[in-house]
Length: 334
Image (cartoon, rainbow, N blue to C red):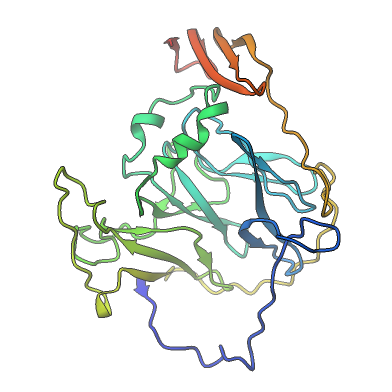
């Protein structure tokens, strides 16, 4: 069952009962000056540690600042297929959660660690022209990932849909369940699966694991398509609102009664410790030149990387020669 949230104010959410704590990443040892740009914050189940992404702009590239609680950031496992991964804070082991072609945005893990709510463009065919061909190694993605990921949107419109996966993620013929899949899906109907209403980002679970909440925005001109472009639909929400909050109730589930989580260590053994004022570590990347990538099953790929004036990689070309990693897809050509 999917229900929209009401606009009533919870009686418990009052200034007397609510505490707001400022969150800041210091760039200087004494805390002066502009702070870091933190985004996509995630509170650890121990209710003590907070993970987030922190990027720095360095010339042509985006740099990742390592913290004592870092978030894994890597290039795709398959070319032009933007997926999400989980990393073990103590061992550093990384496992892939999504593999369905197209783009996956930030996700939320259920309180019992058994389910994953993801917002994904899967099923919209928004990016199939990029990611539909499977098992291409992410070689050109060394310089194209940011461009590839940007095609998921059309201006302010996002094409994200909410999906529910088990903790093991996509595999074989299993690609999860669309949370708002039931209904007619008629454009302009205002229904919970109206394709002209799209999820935005960052779903969240209720503490008892029975509900998932996410935000949506209605498609606005000129993102409705067509050469003219086509007119957009009027909102059927109260007051003509163009944004709304969706609360999905998992009716077959019993509320969780979970024990408290022990606090994890402040140290991440495989991470690079950061203290305010430290210089960002340099990210390793291949040097310009010619390379040969052998297929894990058969064939090879000839790779040419051209360097720019700042010694970074500016161009990449690949020629495949009956290349295959898994033995079922074979690539030939450039």
